[in-house]
Image (cartoon, rainbow, N blue to C red; front, side, top):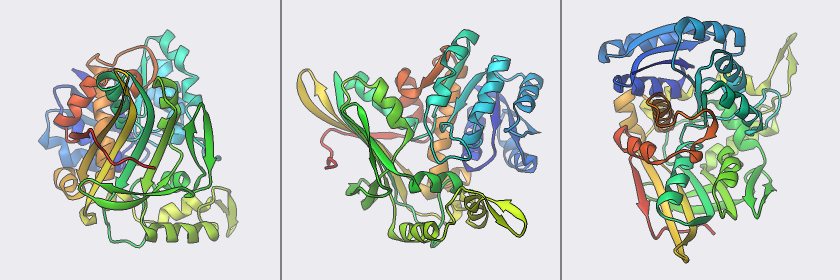
Length: 400
């Protein structure tokens, strides 16, 4: 049915690529492109004899729009799935616009030199993509992504209006290291060391990093400490969900992680300001990334489960209602299937699903969209089919 160019070959990309190859009726051909083409070649060698999908590889600098345009023109994909770094979203979007090619990503743009991420840069492409007759799907991971689809599904099937959303991201896995991150260390540390924020009564409320803590008892994981963070889907959900009064995002962290992170912050290792070292300019956070374990290597040693979902409070037929939609994912089951830990799995599977829905025409709509703006039902059906079955509760424990 389709041909897709996939940019990136890290942990999330490995999952998405293997899921595309399981779904070869839709993904007849894929090209894996990365700065390090040897990683693409190794993944191709691992899976090409297990699928009907035709796999090719290419070397690509995703910071270079002209290079991306040249590869798109050569390969002629139906869509580009961007699984590179968030810094590269705009160069890839520019290339898709120039070649009139559909675009899908999992994380919103952030500039390299500023620890800030928001949708404004990508939303600025709305009219251009609409005029070009092509679709851009922003944030087709889990959070954002599945959490956005959960919100649209809850509104469509269970509420007349949603007033409160609490997004809870729990990783109950243990990889055995004193300190490691479960996805790209540079992006992870920038995210959790930034100030927190939540949306309430039409405006942002800013908090200090890790200032707000709650304890929650997660299904199949147990009781965990969780902390309020700023997260990108809050920004789009605040615009697209009618009746909303407050949206918060919480993520669980163990004490060892927080202690190590505070120490690294105190000695300047989480800084993104360049420093001179032995006559060379380096960025401390990028150096730290180089010495930490690669998240893609954590699969064989990570045990436990993740639990990620949304608690909704609102009204249906004039009556108050609460509803909890979530997914539980087992780290070792993910590793047995794809050689991945659950963090990469829960992002890579939705990336494949969002791309599939663009290619098969169900989400093919000119313009730039967040997932809650599109029909949630085919995505929810695909989650159950492709490895992320969802659960629901109509009387959940609420977060105070």
